[in-house]
Length: 305
Image (cartoon, rainbow, N blue to C red; front, top):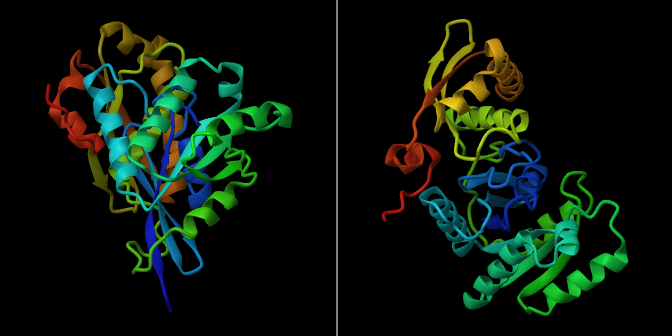
């Protein structure tokens, strides 16, 4: 039996649908999803089996013009994932690029294209979120991007609904080199249980407080305790930068954090298939995004000034 295995990097501007596509192709949730831009902060690897081929999809942070230390760490991580990959998939938010051809998403996308050209990289282009779009709107966008001459194939998909997503997987399969599998065939990803638990809670915070809580907050699993009855007790800390943000997360009478905890616990019990005792604490740390230990927890390199 000849086996194949390799890495496929899913790159793109923030909120293009990278995590949704990776979750779809892997067949289970390994990356969190929210409407908030730059939700993905670290490369998350999802393992997908297609016959005798194992594809390790790398869900990278959105690539944009960085301003802060955390931004620089995320963008550096994303390009590292692309540079090491056997296949590169650039995914774009098609309706956004059509509606705002000179908008931020378009500028970020074309900057990525220029970087790929500099690196002489070949990639697949995925136009996502095409539900309800007119073909007459899509064709000029496809022509504009195909003129860049770096795309071997163009796919028009809905990652959310799964429409034509498997075509992307097939393209990746054809580019995986011969070699042994890197993961057991029943393993879905390389993210640890502690980190996945923290990410799930962060997703619920973003979904619940999308418009109220600034981007600069994070969640860390501080303690993981296995219980004799098979359940697990998880203590997590939510870091925010100001007292006002802490009040938002807590909510009146603690109602907001209670709801966030309920939503996170329900999903964690489904993922881990056992009872979860989840305890959330909120701490104010004005400069958490400048501390090396938080980057290590997120699996990011700490950028020096």
